[in-house]
Image 1: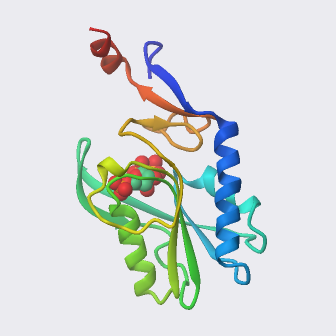
Image 2: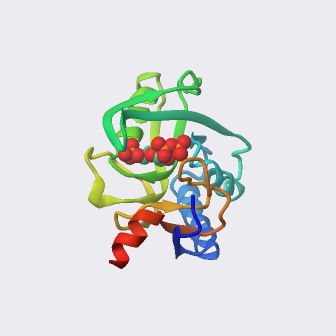
Image 3: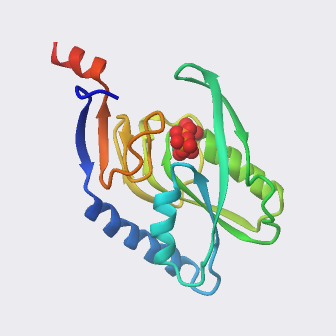
Length: 184
Ligand code: PRP
């Protein structure tokens, strides 16, 4: 983190909150009689999940699952390891997986497979952001907040090396080195 890091607001908080309200309305409309079991993919989706839950009657709890992709440096190996929350009791439940961002699609695909394998009746996906140009796995996404270009975003729960999750807006982040080379 440095004072020369650059930030550009991509989605102001007000726009994000309003879109979350619309997504919740779609979720309720699709299944008015049976509130889903909410499962947030942490850490990044915690803020989004908390806001979404407020609009969903009959969903008092947000469960959490942790997933990580392992690889060297910034390159993912494509292997997703599921940590705490992998043993949630989902048998017979209609699960709604809540993500902050779907990039390659590997994380959400691995979680869907895990929960459907554990007997979930269905496993739908709500993501605040998607980067379609980065997709490697053709995983179905049921509810999408915003489709964005391939830029590194932080804020509204999303981090860079553990920083910036508390920023209210969704912001494009350009670290010092990249900002300098872009400026020539
Ligand atoms: C991000 C995000 C998704 C995953 C998406 O998590 O929250 O879980 O990456 O990537 P994919 O579609 O390519 O699988 P991250 O690894 O940044 O962890 P964090 O949420 O704990 O910060």
